[in-house]
Amino acid sequence: MKAVVVGSGAGGAVAARELQIRGFEVTVLEAGAPFRPFTRRLSWAEPLRRSGVLGEGEIFERLFPALKMRRSSPELILVRGLTVGGSTVLSCGNLVRTDRGLSEIGLNLSPEFDELEAELCPCPVPEEKWSGVTRELFYAAEKLGLNPRATPKAIDLNRCNRCGLCELGCARGARWDAGRFLAQAIDRGSLLRSGTAVAKVAVEKNRVTGVVTDSGEIIGSDVVVLAAGGIGTAQILANSGYKTADRLWADIVVTLAGIRQNSSQLCEPPMAWYAQHEGYILSPYPDILSHYFHKPWRRTRIEDRVGIMVKLADMENGRVGADGNVVKSLTEQDRLRLEAALGQAREVMVKAGIAAPYLTGVANAGHLGGTVPLERTTAASLRPAGLADGLWVADLSLVPRSQGMPTILLTAALALRVARKIV
Ligand SMILES: Cc1cc2nc3c(=O)[nH]c(=O)nc-3n(C[C@H](O)[C@H](O)[C@H](O)COP(=O)(O)OP(=O)(O)OC[C@H]3O[C@@H](n4cnc5c(N)ncnc54)[C@H](O)[C@@H]3O)c2cc1C
Ligand code: SF4
Image (cartoon, rainbow, N blue to C red; front, side, top):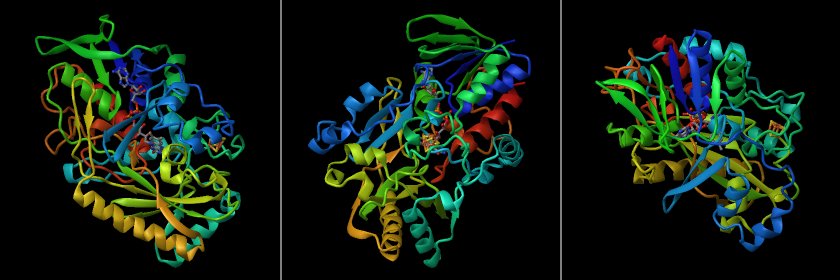
């Protein structure tokens, strides 16, 4: 049987590999180009950054086309990877379980979590390899009773040179990304077509017959698995005449930064530890995005800045149009919860002796889900209501609630379950 998988990120790569193993003839269609990490030498960009020439990232996007940034409201920038490997190639390598909202719909992904963890062996960066300031922040959070713990990561520490730039791609191949699963699928016979954006699905008599690409090419298939992410999958479905949910969530990230001369927080993989609370985490984070594109941060050298990220589970209120336009803003409730969490980050800073002024970075978000949410009635079949026979979704779009936690493992576990259901 032929299967087309649309998208090659956390969901697409897992689904493609599993379907290929189970005997399908798999073609992966990926809108982006093969991934190339950004140059390791960022010092050239410093004068441009301080003068403000880099603007909001338009120039940077031209130099690093895998990273797509877009404002979805005046206060929020959405970030995603449009490339082979999807957003996983921009990740910090954090691999943790999260399943907010799934027990409510009767979905338990523990077997898939177990299986993927056994394969990927996530483990923390040992404390002795953290920067001094990251350790001090950890102890401060501990003293404040915030219960921090080391973050499990899919990073080969023998290869990692602690450049700290995981979000720009790992040039040393130390950090896992979905490209590895994809390579295994290709080794077994899958075909990958990069630079091939899918516009819509082709359906006859309520049965999927393939997809139509942006250039009008029709690619026939018995099964179509959409894994183009929370925005891409919703856009394709809307373009194909399906109603999607105006419930896009994104997990809002805001970093609070203080000052300590020569603390060099960049000399380690980011987010070495995290403190989890209801609907958000705190984690040490230098925030490259705000460093380069956030005006209030321009005066400080990255070596002197110390950041703590708040990653917040936001309200599920975003909308994706058939043209790909996205409207997503922070609600009053998001703002209040964000303020409270940033207050906690501030307490950690003070306790660790990090100097003021404490400045927040730009609000950004890259966990894009919720646009084709599973419900109690559809969780067992894993088939969102109304889809044509043979049409499936296998990415974060299926997850009904925001997480405020890293989402790769969740996406991968769900895609694995979907692929097996297809079989
Ligand atoms: C900067 C950043 C850092 C992150 N760090 C972490 C982390 O450390 N740990 C963690 O757990 N999570 C992290 N995440 C989140 C995680 O990467 C995503 O939640 C996860 O990859 C979602 O998987 P997905 O398959 O839904 O989408 P994606 O991985 O984004 O994959 C979607 C794919 O579809 C392709 N596509 C889109 N439209 C089309 C189309 N029309 N036709 C064909 N292809 C299309 C895209 O190019 C992409 O390859 C991070 C996200 C970002 C942005
Ligand atoms: S910090 Fe390590 S894992 Fe991250 S990009 Fe650098 S070498 Fe790769």
